[in-house]
Image (cartoon, rainbow, N blue to C red; front, side, top):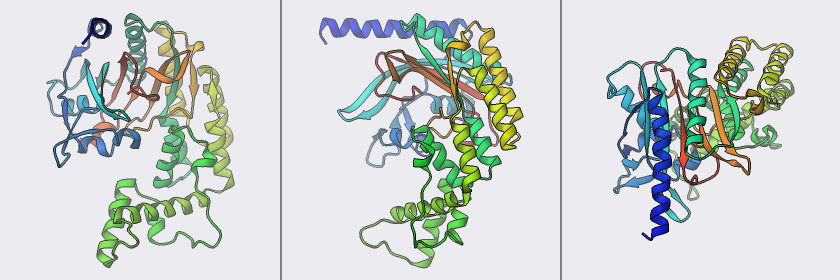
Length: 376
């Protein structure tokens, strides 16, 4: 390593240590999740883009190098490795992902709060500490984007959108697509989605795919034309989504379009959401109240809420995020998140726990992020 590269690495490590020290000063205890993680823990929980970038080990691919810290920290918490019912932990280390140029090692510093009941206050604390850590590590001018995944979850549920289609809408919106491009359009002459296809549209992705595999196996259907059973399954699932989308109707589509268009200064968006809920006749008061409370806690910590932007369409591709979301970007690079995080109460259940665990966290890239998009 030449002198310039060595000096650059030393500078990055020093920046990460300064950020970590800020978390530790706030009462977060350093932890070090294992670099080698079970691949299965990530396969159904992370976005498709990250899933293809896992660095697998061995012929079986049973293990992978950790691509992020949140899931390993949550697994350590559920395994009792922190010896407490609540955990306030921080970390600084490498994450590993494939890139077009081969394996990439990047550095993240972050913090996670698990088990605390003061949800909105903890959300604001995590945001505030992440921005303070970004400042001490040399990223002082950042623009903050806010979101709330629970709002869209509630709107889809209250509109009666079926499970498979809800997942498609969430994934499509998180990828930056307009609703008109997300919802499939039926082709003339195609049959209605009756029977099995209707049942598929009402269950989650993994359950639907498993059901299709079982039905194909029971019926003795063999793959045709070079298509695998998984490919046949995906085709049938797409058909079930198409039928469910047609059943939405103009009124529910219009409601979703109106909801997803809400963005701007956070307090103004709260007023817009209350107006939307009233006109759409959807009981969203509790979720909007929590959003308003969170904004109040953010302001109480001295952050300039008026300079932040809230958007109902701001989501993450990771399925485990279930509430508060944020990204912090540099003004000259609005698509690259320097820091980001959010609430993921549902992750514990997805990892085998009997119930949800209140959890929220944030991470910062030390150095340049490996790609655009979510920091976490």
